[in-house]
Image (tube, rainbow, N blue to C red):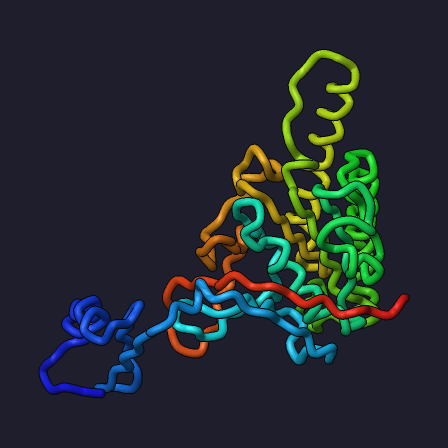
Length: 300
């Protein structure tokens, strides 16, 4: 719509009053084409309506796109993971962190150009917890044992070093994202759920506590190595945690960032903030609570 001599700012100031008059949850006013505005009203809040997501099983056209869900105006929201070293998903227990990660796994699992390793601090073995139905798709899975997690992180750091040494000879480029992931050189995703399990600080003088403290410190250094040096060789780290602070994350000055999605479960890319892909608005986004229906995956 367009009204002569009425500015965008005036429309936006009137939005709360329009919401009251129209009995809407919210009203937004955004610029459209030159001289035109789009006024959008929401009668039912999409952020409080539970939804189900059923994966298609098809190989996604864009492998490095994480479709987060819907914003406060029921518009699709996604974020590009291309050339991004890591993502932090932070939120209170039971508010959808793992469901969000599971959605990404289910949407991309059909592609041979992506492989996963999972460290889940909520369980002791792969047949337990929220990743049980997807564990067979991962090439490695560890529970809350710090020693096993340490071995996995070391394995991935070795992979990172091997890739760094061979990428120019095998791919002809210094950055994998210049040619994109493939079955021969897949995007390798490390998912660390309940991350504070592996990185927390242990205090005590007894031998067992000292051992755990040493393992936790080394785990933080190893994952920091993957974050700092893994991007160009196609390694992505996804950290899910209840509290995204330096004390609970690998000790890196770059381990903090602006959230891309704020809701009960906040998602951020702390090392490189990519643009959100949205159908209309470029404003701060929200993702509504969702449940992911997990498909049965064939054995490897």
